[in-house]
Image 1 (cartoon, rainbow, N blue to C red):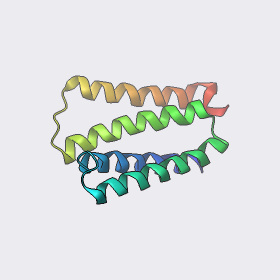
Image 2: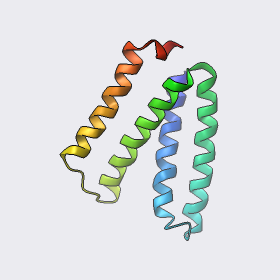
Image 3: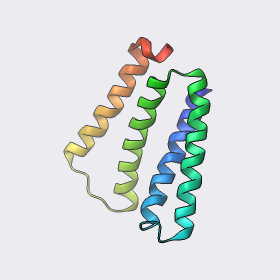
Image 4: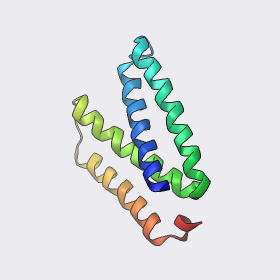
Length: 109
């Protein structure tokens, strides 16, 4: 269950960061409000996750998923160009999360 909540929290955090971009420095009140609501909700969901998952594992997945997700949203929604090193970096982040969750005792506490 904590993995589902973690995925939900990451998704909400990606939406929050995307709406932060769309808020244009908090000058567009609708997107600014959405940003605040989504970040608050994302942190609430994360607080539920760390009840049952080690905080180091939860945060590494959270941060890695957020970085990869926001980078891909930037490429798709905002036409930001990603080069080979950007894709390599995303791949290394994903590989790091997989190694931690599959091989490290950190995943189980």
